[in-house]
Structure formats: C-alpha cells, structure tokens
Amino acid sequence: MNKFNAYMYYQNAKAYSEGNHRRWDKDSLKKESYQKLKEYKEEFNRLFSSEKT
Image (tube, rainbow, N blue to C red; front, side, top):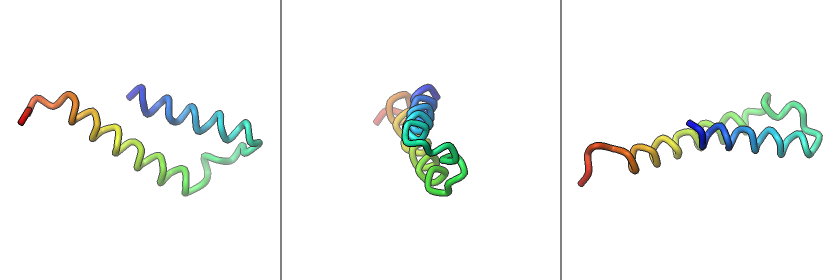
C-alpha cells in the first residue's frame, strides 16, 4: 500500500530529524503503525469494495 509506505517514510524522516535513530524499536511506533495500516485497509475496502450498498 503506497499510502502506508508514505506514512512509514514520514515517521522515519521525522524521527531522524529529531536525532531518534532507534524509533523502530519502540512499541509505540509498532502500535501506531498497526493502527494506521488497519485504517488504510478499511479505507481501501470502503472505496474499492465490489459490494456497494
């Protein structure tokens, strides 16, 4: 998913700009990323689902 990749690149750039080179090891990023991926999947399914109501 391009949108999720962009989100992760942004998080990485933000962390590095703050001098935080270990951001990937934090549980908070893992939780945030999982939640963001879930949101993006739901958005994708909403927009492109073949089951329209």
